[in-house]
Length: 371
Image (cartoon, rainbow, N blue to C red; front, side):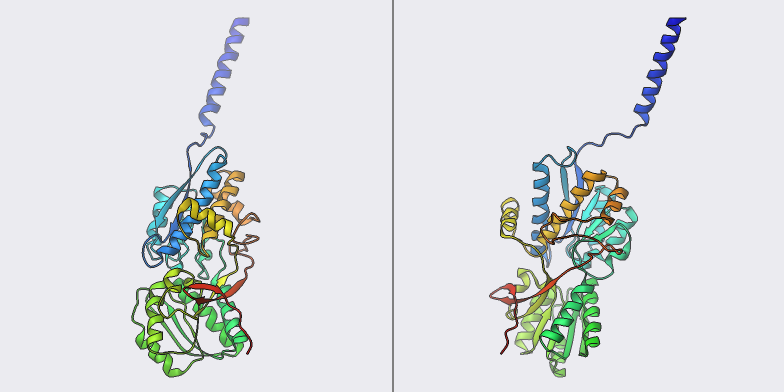
């Protein structure tokens, strides 16, 4: 009898143990995949190179210290060409590569058609693209870069209050970024008491702006607000110079790359950018490990990867858990900004901007000198 009871107990232990082994969640192994959507070719390739460099440094630092919970980070990089290819890139990263999160795009032209794909697939994404409204695609879309709803207002306030301009013309690129920042600028400029004398959009691939520039010249504005993409800017600035449109030119952060700052006719052009951290030692580290230069977007890619790493350390790789943790994020270990904290629309709660002027092929901080 005793032997029978012992064997029954043994069998029960084996059965129960086997049940728990079979039903317990499998231990995740292998690399943790994080996607990067960046323009590696096309008109914004140098921007994309600098963006990739920041992400590469973050991955190296994480993996050199043992990864996340003994798993290494694998960066899956896709070329969105700063275009509607962003949709194809997001579809691949979310549904084929099965990444746990996506950093980028940095271009609104790529982000506009992409964010709904991440939302539908339930993949947390930290975008840098700044067009207003992008994060409203859903609760999986976050942005660690200031929205153009803030940048456009800053530009209008600066043009009206600091530069003292009252009559503006606008030429903008017809995509999410150009349309968004143009709308905010125009509305705020008129609210302040300014007048919009001319307002025209151009396709992203447009290179002949002579007719528009001639029309601008005819209405005699004292400032041209010119939020366009690099290809438009390179041809447009030369044509502005050739047609002798002698007015103050102001643009947005799309001008903060060597394609534009080194362009013929760029000297003296003003543009707005977010105030951010870009310390020299950070720039050197990026260049050493990636062989790439840096720009204003580099630290946002770096911080995006590091934010994902911190969240995954806390909650694991479940995408909904990552999303929920991002919604209550208070991150103070970044390079780009002192604090990354999201509002109800998953945009930054606050941001500061500055004006740069193009001098000698580079953008430098601008200070208006009194006469």
